[in-house]
Image 1 (cartoon, rainbow, N blue to C red):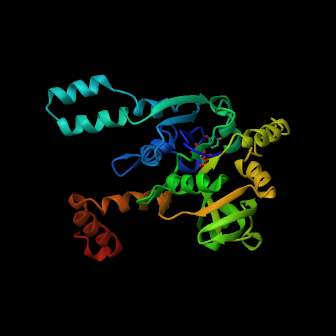
Image 2 (cartoon, rainbow, N blue to C red):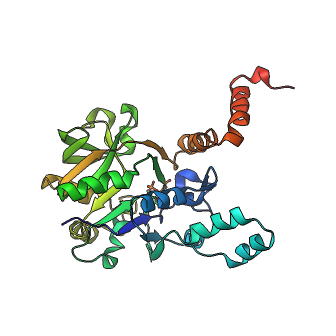
Length: 301
Ligand code: UTP
C-alpha cells in the first residue's frame, strides 16, 4: 500500500558538466535561483508536500549542500548582535527545514545508480519520493504533492510528465501512454532520449517520482549487467521504470506548473528573471534593464 510517504531521495551527485565552469567547485544544485540555491527550492517543494526526511545522494565536493541545511552558529551570532532579526530568522529556518541523511555515490554511474545508493535506507514496504536537485517546478500545489495524491489513490508508482517542444524530446525520457482520465496516463513504455521522429509522444519525465522498493530489484539487475569500463553507458532510472511500464504498473501524471531545468543556461537565467519580476523591489529596474538590452539604442553612451 502506498500511504504516508515520509522520505524523499534527492540525487545531487552528478558532475554538472553542462553548467561548467560555474559548477567546477560550486555544485550546480547550489547555484542561486533568485535569492536561494536551486536545491532549497527543491527542498521547499518536498516540505510543502508533507515530507520532512531527505536522503541526499552526494559525491565529492558536495558537502556544501548538507551545510546549507545545517546550523551556522557563527553567522547566527553575528546577525543577532547586529540586530538583523529578519535575516536571522530566515537563516535559522533553512537549518530547521529537514532531517538529512546523506549517502555517497562514489562513482557517478547515472541516475538509476544514484537512486539505488539509498536502498538500505528504505524499508521493505515503504514507498518514497525521488526529486531531482536541478529540476525546478513551481505551482500552488507542489509537483511531488500532485503525484502523491494519485499514487495513494491508485496505489501505484507514478512519474511526473510535462509536454516539451518536439525538437527537445531527445533530451528526455519520453512516455508512451494511454490517457485513462484527464492528465493521468497508464505508461506503456518509456524511451530514453529518443530521436525527434521516433518519440512516442512529447510527454517528458521531469524529475519527480513516487516509487516502491521493487524498483531496487530492477536497478540491481541493471547494475549487475553494467560493465565498469563502459563509463559512457549510464545506469538509467528510465531502464528500471521501463520494466514497471511493461508490467502496466506505472502511471504518469501531467504536472501543473512552470518548470526550469537549471542545468540549461537559458532556463537557469529565465528562472532568475521569473522570480526577479515578482519582487516589487526589483521588478521595475529589471524591466527597464531588459528593455534596454532588447533595444540597445536606448542605452546611454
Ligand atoms: P543530470 O544528468 O541532469 O546531471 O542529472 P549531471 O550529470 O550532474 O549534469 P550534466 O548533464 O553533466 O550537466 C540529474 C540529477 O541527478 C543527479 C545530478 O546531480 C542531478 O541533480 N545525478 C546524476 C546523480 O546524483 N548521480 C549521477 O550519477 C548522475
